Length: 223
Image 1 (cartoon, rainbow, N blue to C red):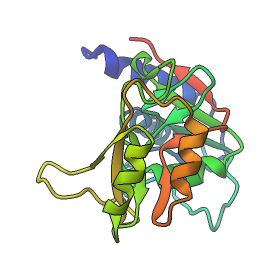
Image 2: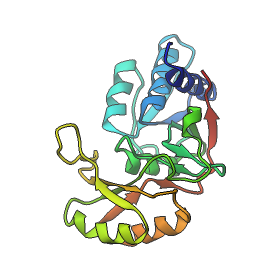
Image 3: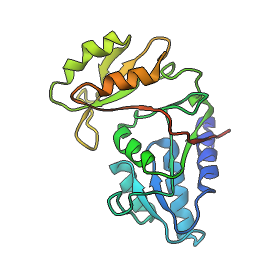
Image 4: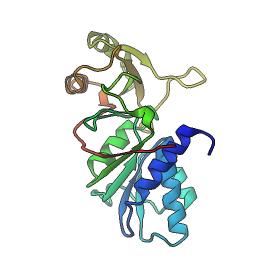
């Protein structure tokens, strides 16, 4: 693989999949690194190296991929406790706190993470930061109705809010039909718990991309 970052992601994913055992109920993450893991789980199932695996996808895109590679799927309603979830992250700080959601799947990802006995986060070295928010904006999922009412409150927190738009210029919708506001904090987020709490207290804010206190195992791949 000629792309060092892609090879690092693949190596991290392979190391994470080594933790998967037959009979597990798995959370299947979303994003470029988690994709490698989903594909490898499908390969091992097809080769008979794993059996009796079922997965809960964290997005419609992951659901489609898992179906294509032969992973049987279930739902959290049928399996509300997951043995292991493998997912990626946009940023990871030294305490294992995360920013996620640039793949527009943060709500489902956070629900699945919260239902998991073990959360494994797979990243390349470029995702490691000393302070969250230094390399990427914080995604905040909001209902469509009145989304602009959050802009002033986000600016009061010291961030620049921008509605996430697709290549066609139209707002991006999550799988639940919500909008995403990307909040860029110059210099990073000084107090992530306070920002998370302040935003989630606002009517219309569904969830933030701050994954705090999940204590994941973080696997950093190398090229």
